[in-house]
Image (cartoon, rainbow, N blue to C red; front, side, top):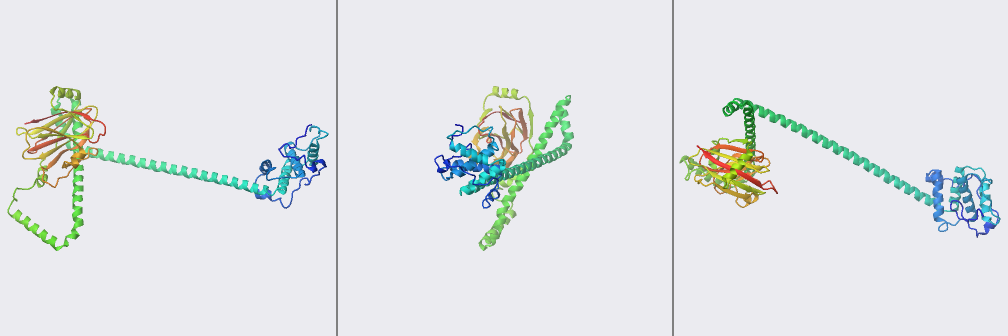
Length: 476
């Protein structure tokens, strides 16, 4: 039998046990008409007709036999309109014959044939209206689906807005980074131009002196003269920058020293403090009137006077680093030192009574190291050269060293202890030197009696130790 199934083509169940299945059934909805009370479902839902029809089919398949119980006639009408939507008007030449005992199939075919030539859209509209009239749950189902669609659209809009905002923020961040990079480039160019201007001015001041010195050192070698002049000009520039930096540090130190005094000044109105200040003034006047005070001036007060007579040191480099290391190894002794990571080695070289100038040479294996020279003013310097190794933190906290340096930025700042100690003058601030590429050498004329402190600073290195080759000697 061709159509004996109790279900239509779209899965619409037809109850073959119903009493209505054994009597002819006529359409209970006129072709192409809708219920006036329910016609506004198409306006309320806002869905296109094909989408609303698919939603009605889904609702019917999900709810049939559970929350939805349709009559036999409504089922026939729904099946007929679903066939009209799927296959168009009934064509007896195409449809298979119906069995003699297939009462349900005959009723469905009659309902489908009764629709005549109504269009596909009209059939979908009738299908939705029949289901809306027959079941009161269909309209809330459509409204819930509408809210779900609206919620998904809202979430999609919010996601799109977030993506747009994120894209705008990223674009703004890129713009800020580009602007920052452009400003940094401008600042770098400005500093480079400023550096070139300073170096050109210094070169003009020392042009004749350096040229004459180079001619004396290499009379017949123009290339070596040019190289030596460039080295001297670069050293002169570095010394100038060091002096400027030292002046700035001294000014900052003076400001930091004066600031607490200015803050304490309003509190000096107390009568007891006034009396103490007057007594101090009287003692100072008595000391000045009677010449020098007992014991002479303190070591700190002599520091500016002595520092004003200190001549700048000279430094240069040589390319014969392998030969220098080989000669140091042959000499043996304590001229090869391993400077551990985080350590600072201080070589104390007293001034010699037969000498007038100190010379030094040094190099390292593989990596650079910080180097600086200080002079400790003392009346009993001794004659023994000694090597002192310490970590910078211990030296600063436990031993209260007077000198505190910043190797990375270059420069030094003197900080004297409360207790009287020999004053120290900075000859060469500590800078990191590329002494693994070439030999660094230098000299300094004795400023007086005392001890030279040659500092090899590896405190900035967290992992690497450095092998140091050095030599120090004096000349007349």
